[in-house]
Length: 213
Image: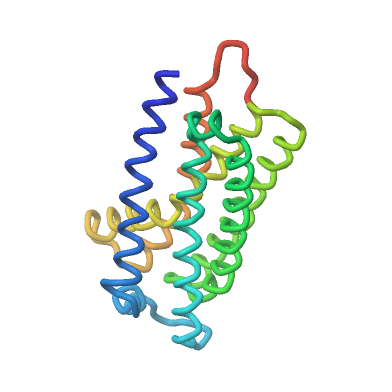
């Protein structure tokens, strides 16, 4: 229980900071995404800026909702106080994930780094909803531990953007690679981390004799 509380507190701090950062940056500091769009070169499709921006606003907004709702549903205190809220909030999370995936699907062809990055985003857009649906299936079967594990796997993908930009910054500013190449590494590097880190957390939280699924 102590490990679980510590992880939840750490998760809460990271999630809140990232939500605030995402909202301020995308809706206040740079609502036109000028900095991000300046990195996009050699696009094969013409980018309809007003449409792309509106899709981006929806994408960011629902990504923040998914992050917040998922965080709340990891709270044992909230779960014990109101299972009905936990259930309704779980569906809010699922809908938010689906909206994020759909909007990401629209933006994928315009991804920085071209086709290689687009393939990476499409891969992410398949893995995330699968993990989320698996969490739903397990709770319908009343498999609480399996539901928790799949939710951990699903929730990790709320941090896709954070990991992409951290890795991109590391390779671009730290190792001097061109931005597009660094971004491609960021996309695929984040996929690896988002698959590995949840498994590490699941094993950390596992009770003696508890099976991982």
